Amino acid sequence: MSSSLLHPPAHLSPSVALQLSQLAPSLLRNAPSSITSYSLSSLWAPAESPELWTTYENLMLSCLRTGDEQSAHLCLERLTERFGAENERVMALRGLFQEATAQDDAALKQVLGEYETILAKDPGNMPVSKRRIVVLKSLNKTIEAITALNQFLDASPTDAEAWAELADLYVSQGMYPQGIFALEEVLLITPNAWNIHARLGEVLYMAASTNDSGSDKYLAESMRRFCRSIELCDDYLRGYYGLKLTTGRLITNPPQASRQSKSDTGLPPPDIKTVERLNEAATSKLAEIIRRNASGEAGWQGYDEAEIIAAKELLDRQSAPIIR
Amino acid sequence: MTWLSNSITGLGLLFLAHACYSAHEHSALHSTSTASISSIVSHGTSAPTVASLPLDISLETIVAVFTVCLGLVLGTPELRPIQWRVWAGKIEREGEKGFMNGDGQTDKDYVGNPFKVLESRPGFIDIRKQRKEFAEWVREGGGTSAAPKS
Image 1 (cartoon, rainbow over the protein chains, first blue to last red):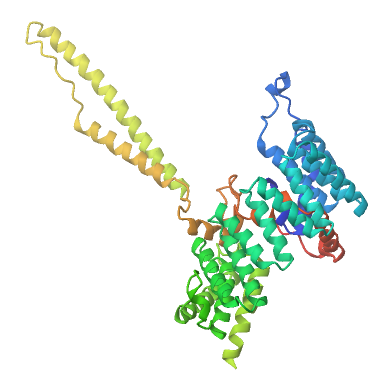
Image 2 (cartoon, rainbow over the protein chains, first blue to last red):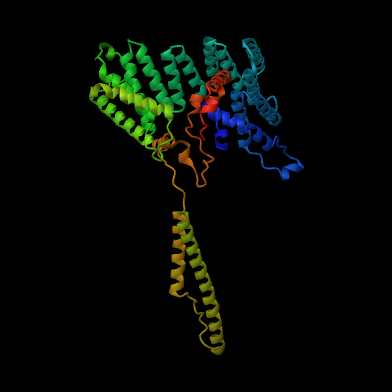
């Protein structure tokens, strides 16, 4: 349990978050509130560990999420006591606390104003600039958030997290080519991130579903991205799901040998035989994953339940026409 | 499996101690006997008799060392995958449970998918949205009906 407090709790399910925040009072009582170096008591006090402060930070996030503001404030106070109010990360956390407790948009705008004064003093404060972008997003000023994020990335172009956020913002606005570009930037920084490969495949698939002109190219590219994600990660359910979807569509409406392909520098459209074999491979792998997960086989239980259900549905949907 | 490796290591150590003890005893006995002989034959050729250990003690030492090695090798924890796709697949397939150590706790250095932060993005966490979602989840009765998973 304490191990999951060492990781950022953003992706946890509500029940786990609730559980974590219910741990807060006892944790706060037992954990040392502050660690003083160079004092007599440090002789018998437990050694300071980085995990302690990570725990405080993540505990604070969980508590804010579940509305336990008292514990969150206590965490924040202890972090401030240890690292000082001028610490960039602590500043961002205090802003986060104010955001969470802000009652309406006016209060949120006040927080935004505070961020801007901080940034006017120190434009290099990365955590606070990120918070500012989030507040802009939260106020439904997505376009401004995108502009701010672009400025942020001009200053720090190797921040994969920011590129990924930018990609999501673009995709939420339906600007798929920009989103694809941002995801490709993420992959330049972390080329082995299998989930980002799958994400890029998904965005490409979305782009192919809406866009008519370059749809074939997007679809083929999407298939390749899913293939790469599987190559990087054995038995990757998300990758196989995407592969099954894309190859299924490539089989039903195969890409026409387009005239403009001569001017394209991109890869040629995939061979229909290859696509069919990939589709078969994805189907059998998905079936295997579902079967083994359902039978409770040890070592196959790490999958997300919702993903398993979705994969089952996909298989049922695709196999139904064959049975009839 | 641990008891097997532990007992093999223990046995090897026992053999090793025995071999050391035998060697010590042998050398002690040998030196006293040669000393008494040399005192009797005081004017003989004073070539120092090379105290060579008997073959069985040397053999026992070697066997003991190999037994200890075998025990230690058998006792190594399960090797981690070194291929990227195997390692990543293990994370996806088994989740946290795949990285338990002996006493049922997840390894301290377990991070799960290290690239998950690129999708959850703790730096860009939208706390208001999360609070709203959580409040909705509570309103739907998620807090009471759904038994919290471990």
